[in-house]
Length: 371
Ligand SMILES: Cc1ncc(COP(=O)(O)O)c(C=O)c1O
Image (cartoon, rainbow, N blue to C red; front, side):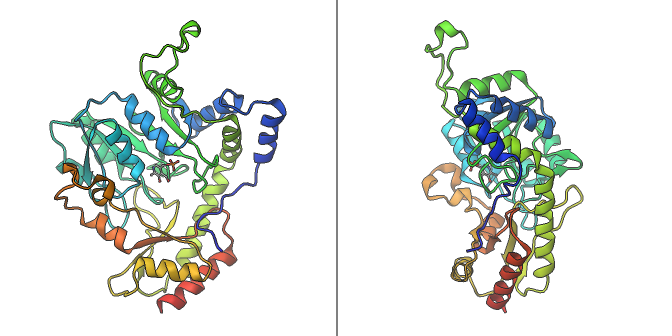
């Protein structure tokens, strides 16, 4: 089977893990956690990093730390992972969904502007699949209407917007270190900010909001989570981050190779190689099936799986999620691109560890299936 994501684990991972085991520091109190936080902060040009259990947890921490009030509206794309909206709903906030560009897969300023009301208090930016959001016009709106900005950069570590690292924008940003990310800790996440108070709040919330006063440790003023990252995970993270530029180069090589191999494939649209504000980092290599292709995405995925090739469908639009059925913010939504993308999009094996021979194999099978 050619896996949809093969991680690249070719650096100091084993050595740093052995250091954890030899020293006995396996829990979240070990030294690699701070090292990883500082290395990530330096990489994305932020002051503070707060490592946590996963990207979903990072979103919970970031949203909660901003102290928005129940009923406040937060604008986010309908075409994204459930983690984004989940963090809002669990805080009693009202999600306001915007559509996405069918070519870049990202949210756009004009759609955001159309949804701003007096109740709007924040924008949750999400960069998807390897290209980033065109940030300047959205950040200008946020400034004009005094909106908080959370930047979900889970998929784009190593990507830059007009030369500045993704994850350096807005009040607070989040990353995921799941195995399909440019840097993996197996499971893991991080919140980054330049605001010392926000960072401190996230540190407290990830650690059950224990009291900072040692004598009052088990006396709680609020409810947090145990979202701590272990030293073992952070050790992996430090080793992985040392090779970030190699991984980014491998991802771009993988993307360029598929662009070449699949250039003449009928009936599919390949991802953009870039825009005027970023070059595709190919977090995943996407295909969208053109209307004349009779094969559905599930049929194509099943045929690929039969030939030993892993793939994944695109995100399911948030307003159609069964878990939110009947909620008023999901009703009467005009989000045609989000719906179309789900129906026609999928992605191919795209890990940094994929070989040229595997990519050739994927291309050969796709050509057989689509011709
Ligand atoms: C954009 C985005 N945000 C958040 C997450 C959640 O991260 P995790 O899987 O680490 O909880 C993901 C996961 O892939 C993601 O793609």
